[in-house]
Length: 333
Length: 293
Image (cartoon, rainbow over all chains, first blue to last red; front, top):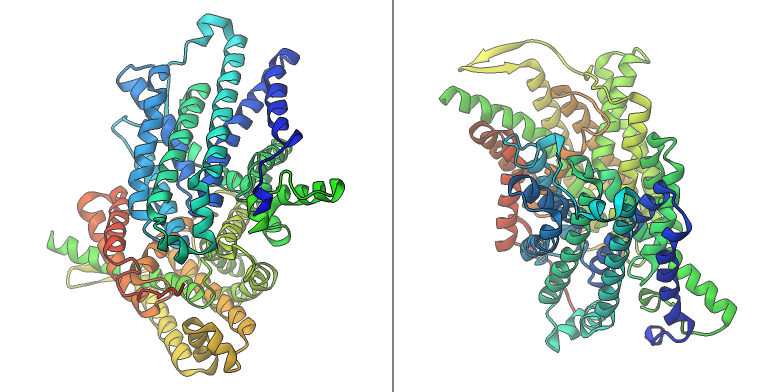
């Protein structure tokens, strides 16, 4: 476990460098499309970081996270349209709502193991999608979705481009916060508990570590952040509709985690960047996108199941010849 | 209401027999390999298209569609095992990884079908027209065809599993992989066989199901989800339990659809499953696995 030793020197600095680089970006370019893309990158990075916590650290094979992301957006939209409460006020409640939803889903699902959890959470997602898209009362807008539920008011303050930049920083701050919490969780007694449970569930149980309780805690916590991200992204787009639940996008996000390295600290973000580049190439030929995503997942799982973070860490060790650094947690287990 | 109820239960019965075929295929794989095959729905879809292709493109007799699609998909299953699932088994996190990989494959296959065949729904050529009345219930010849095919496939399956050497080896592997291997069962061959048979069953259920509805690139997803619910209900890996569960769930679904509307069928089914799993985590007919520390 010495690979988990505290990062030193550069290792501690480079995330800050990245954040600084991204913070400077809006001053360097005024390409709206590009900034929009980076916002999407922030949002998806946030989801995969949190999802990775569930999947890789807590060992819960849950697929409901993607539906929770959409629910966050739907909460803000529904509250905005029907109760006339703007997204700025429903932002935190959306997170809390999603945390509650995650808790309620986790309550029965987490009593089960691996494949059962995956199936039940997949079924939950489908049910949520069905209930939303089959609604004809206008509550969720059915197949058309909801729009016109307002925004954070940045447009009035900073103008049209200023709103984009404001959203950009909003997303960046959200991502940094979520990553910080994710790393805190990994390093906290909670992270240790999960490692103990992974290493030997029997011994961990014998010293009083309850798998169920800890998993439920992480499940709820990550649901909160994913809900916030969903609320933000719905507001940013200005609409929510059932196409957000698209199975292809769910697989794209899973692919990010797998390609980056499940359970590693920065792998999912790396995978997110890589797959977004792939996704951009596919923009010209959208009919090939899902095939490429599916194929990438299969190929990576077959040839490189630990993802690129592990490969990079090994490369880094090879060059510098030292054992610490960005070694992912799972590489040594 | 009475006639409508009988009609509903009857059509639930027809649907259940297809679900049973699908779910048995799924549960067979899980029982022997401990793999959840999320590509099962995509294999179903491919099976339906193979039958369609053989009739529409090759101009073969319509009724050859079923055996042809069974054989073709069996081959696909073999290839899938050799290239994808086989190499992954036993590696770290393989249970999760095979799940993700098979869903990736499903996505790729479905979008491939969308590219080749387009989003338009195709009718399944493997069908007969006509119907007759029986105690107030409209029975179509197609339903009878479905029931006959499904029942004979299930009976053959039962004979195969409980009387043939390979079938016994499959069950032995499912019960005690290590002991089976010590008795000279080649695990690799068994896994290959299981994947082939299961994919063949997927093809059969795909052809049958599409003969009630239609063929479309993603039409396998929801039936697959229902089949998984059935498998969980009956206890994953437990074939007899799965059969009972298929009929319980299929008929319940039809009745719920009749009284509350189709869109509540899946949510209610799901609620039922949660309740079952809370009290019986290994399913209604499943036995709890004892995990040694």
